Image (cartoon, rainbow, N blue to C red; front, side, top):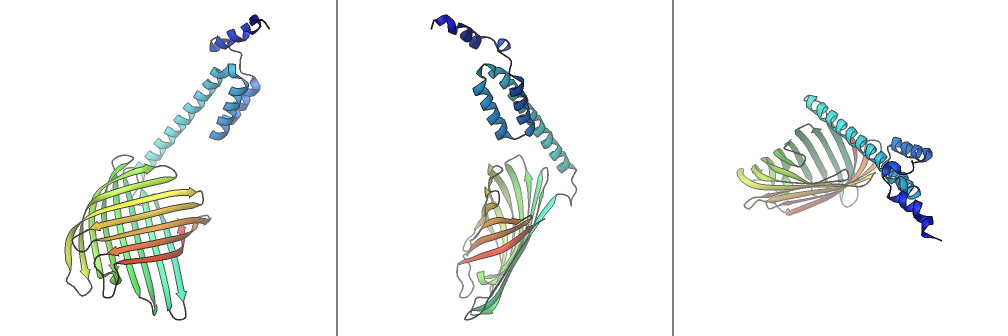
Length: 305
């Protein structure tokens, strides 16, 4: 076949976009319908097929794609601005979210006991401020088991300098005789940084000084300075499954401590979740006959509101 037979095609391929054949109305309508759906995967699939079937109309397809991306960016900017305005107008009691966690256990026989675990948490996300309030109680009483009474309450306000860097304060109360103290008060503060931030995962690191007042079992009260570091991690493994870990470390002379709580949440129905957790606590100071390390596994129900 003579080369001249391919000449019209070659000239058309090299022609300016305004001389290229127009995109068929049917194809244009399909692309517009995909864009109207708002489903990014559908839009990408339709655009890819349109390019493959109409390669000479690539510039026109690109123009439609640019318009869609501009609309998405403008809509996202509008949503962000509206959200920030709502946060700025929020009052002291607005935008609070909370959750209740409850679990109980009972055993009969050689080791007979009844156990209860409950927690209550509140979070508030503001334009610059973020507040987190937690309270936990754990009681276990029975025969041939170590009786447990553990109480923890904390408040942590954060001030955000930007999307990643923030400063925090901490006020905390603890009581756990098995770990060697009747009560322990902690006041601290420092800086925090969000290392990973996305819809599926979040990783935060915090560090700073802390002042701790401890009232040990059968010993005089003590007040000391400590270095505190904490790591908070969240990973949405699947739409109905989420892994979390919160850990904190206090470095003190002769009475360092650490705790790590790992939990796996599985959505059941609406705001109700099942939680499987593993709690590890370490104390340099121990009670009579106690251990430096205390661990506990739980299965609880969590209701968010």
